[in-house]
Amino acid sequence: MRFTLSQVSIPLIVLNLGCKFVEGAILRPNEQLEKRDQCALTLGIAENLVNALQNSFWDGNGYVNGITWTDANTYEDINNLMLAASLSTWDYVNTESTLAQLGLANAGNWDAFFQGSFDDSQASF
Image (cartoon, rainbow, N blue to C red):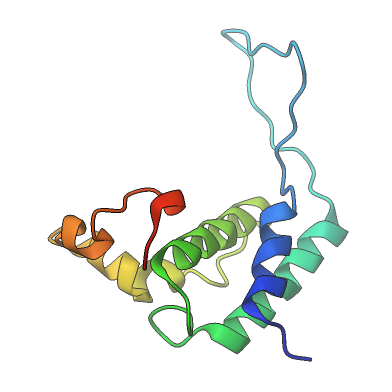
């Protein structure tokens, strides 16, 4: 089965991979944060979605027919999954993508790259 980009990206954004809001919760000075157990089923579904996305759309430096902001949001979702599931499966998106290479070089002309649009709600490309 082939997935479209919207079928794969949207579920990744919707999945809650470990954030839990507890009203009135306060971290006291000597308390330690502990990682919550993750729902194996949710992480498994997310992993399958990322595999489908990578197999269908990754072209070695970004996503086929993707734009900067959808690609960047997808990188963020993938990294959130890798953190939640203690995976490194897709680390290559942090070094091989055009956006990552520009950031790693620390020499990019960000104004030209983003064409004056520094917020995804303003993206025009």
